[in-house]
Length: 635
Ligand code: PRX
Image (cartoon, rainbow, N blue to C red; front, side, top):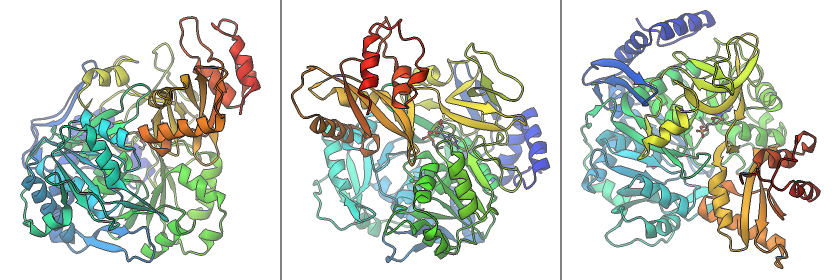
């Protein structure tokens, strides 16, 4: 019998030991006993981090939607699968049962087929948090199309870059979206993006805000009209375990966003297994993850992981501040949410508003609290514990990444004793390592280093779409035979991990990963700009905010600097999206550089963080004089 549901700390250790001593046997048992396969694997795992190549459940045949939908129809067909809570609190919530979801997915899948989408084709999904978003992921998966969801806050340029990178044939979008009191013209953004995407043949448009939009004859189709005519039965496409399931883009420290590719079998097993255990989901629970499905958290822990377990998963369209800062708590009370999973940035924003919003609502249904996306500071952790969990709900601080597909280091609710700001222990099957700068593993406790993983796990991304070399260079070249995460971490005296943050040029702002290079590229497109450098500095709600140092072509630039600042942020909004806007922009006469011409971001970071006493020796710089000037003019 496999240990599918771990309930105690001793049991965690016992199962963990088993999972690392004999990973193949362990993951074989879990897969065999808890999932539906059309054919069993011939080999549980083959791997080589040097190549790199990882295969799980090779030879197995399955479809993830049979596991998420069909298998529940008989046992829990009328149970709510997706509980949709709209942006407007006066609009009624929608309870979509497993039977209804199955039917909606089948119909949608038939629409995709009717529009010429086949197994292996890429479909870009650019939708707000409405049920069609979850349905469209599952519809793609049902027919073996590879979905590539782009968060609907990205700009037209960012969208077209992603569409072209994976050569999507279709885009699924909506006429617009609600965001608090505002509406957003999504279709307008898509139209702009599609000026530059030769591969897109069709666009399906869901109606959400009933706006008057432009529909291009022969290319754009109203989704509902097609659904009304679609058959409600759709057989699954039988997929190989290692066939791609989806692509999801994440920022790198340089260049293009990376299209992380996940595959069907291992991703299904690992997301389902982690969901069940980390959150201790039981049959009658209502689970709510506040992330957007445009990010990996939504893919794995709103859609696939919960549905594979037959869970009720809440999808919230709106924002925590609308109509007021009590909205989350109103929803928790209304739907009697049992597991609540959010990001530190949301916790900090809510904490800032005080506890009066919380006090108006009954939060006694909450059993487990979760956090993800960035390190949680001690103050936010305690606020969450004291006021939301009332010191009774364990906080699972889950560390993981788009690349890892599922939760990697985390407490198991009720089993692992928690510790503020610590993600605690590796999940079952995960073998972390801390490395020093010389490439040696740091053993023992009370140490810190760069966080790596020594052994494959089922849901790891298999490649970067179209660029396997970059996958190798980014994740498998820094340390021999290790997956390198890009994060720093420390291990305390009992072996608990605390993630200290990125050690590369990725900055996490409000839980969103932002690479500095694409932002700098956007700034440098401004005709008045000569060069720029972006660093992060601490922000009490966003965790980090962006500080830009910008050198102008003409030092005596006569234009008003405030206008220039606006223009720069406008360029960033157009190229990437409003999430990448700079909080501070300082105009400089030069940027500190090494003699080989490399910008010394470390120095700029210290200045932005007001740590000028820690600059170290600047005399070896090519242009040490600019440092003083930058310090004098700091914002
Ligand atoms: O730096 C880590 C941080 O978020 C990065 C991954 O971002 P992304 O791929 O967007 O996925 C976010 C959601 C899984 C990591 O490299 N991070 C994520 N979770 C935590 C975290 N940092 C500290 N504690 C966490 N719990």
